[in-house]
Amino acid sequence: MNYKQKGFKTAGILAIAAASVALVVPAVKSQSGSIIKIDGSSTVYPITEAVAEEYQIENKGATQVTVGVSGTGGGFKKFCSEDEAVRTDISDASRPIKEEEMAMCEAAGVEYIEIPVAYDAITVVANPENPIESMTVEELAQIWDPESEGEITNWSQVNPEWPDAEFVLYGPGADSGTFDGFTDKINGDEGASRTDYTPSEDDNVLVQGVSSDPNALGYFGYSYYEENQDKLKAIAIDAGEGAVVPSVETVRDGSYAPLSRPIYIYVNAQAAEKPEVAEFVEFYLTNAEGLVPEVGSVPLTPEEYQEGIARFQNGETGTTAAK
Image (cartoon, one colour):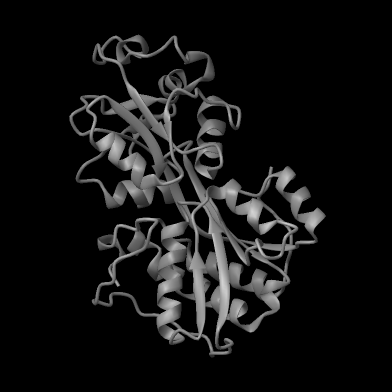
């Protein structure tokens, strides 16, 4: 299916008919009437939702896969919950699990298998009518720094060549892994951000805000920019070696710095023993290389997907990516 046409609104997805990727289906072992519960990152959501839809088509609905969007932090709260009725089987995450989330999982007796599924670029976006084409990391930090709140409110305060107009800011909420990644890379301290901006865990809300205001600036995962580039402009970021716009090529070669990153799924190790969960995860990793570009993210290499399959099949718990 051409998932770029589907929009990925969090209320659901539109059904379309054309098939455009060849899927590889593991031997079917799923249990009729079973449910796989997934929640977490809005950045990983389009990938997981695309995989879930294709999986349910292939297994003829024998297993229902539910995919929620509560942000990376919100997803881990469910994934590591002591309440089994709340706990999810898989958590989408646009950053590695944090130490406090590891402690929460440990307290709940939840072991997990961490698997990278794609690369993403945190994309800084402006309204197409905005004349600004690029920003240095320092300029971006000056806009978003907590100490700028109430002090820096005008484009020309940051750069005298920029418009003499007040900017309006949009970005992910504090439960978002994208928020954590951006504040860490730009402000130098994870979670450090001015608060006088419009936050949302629904990236479509951010798209609407920026696209409707010539003085708006925002940031979110690359797939949402790629899906809406007819009404948004990606700002090139200069980390000291020239301004670079996000793309498949610049994410993979590392030149889109410092906002490129891997994104993950975390699988509950006990849930992974269920045939339907094992089947779904192997379906995910076997078909991700074809489905990831369909939703505008950057796929891993075939070797990296094979490493993920081996990690899952070997039941390798814990994290190799956390700080």
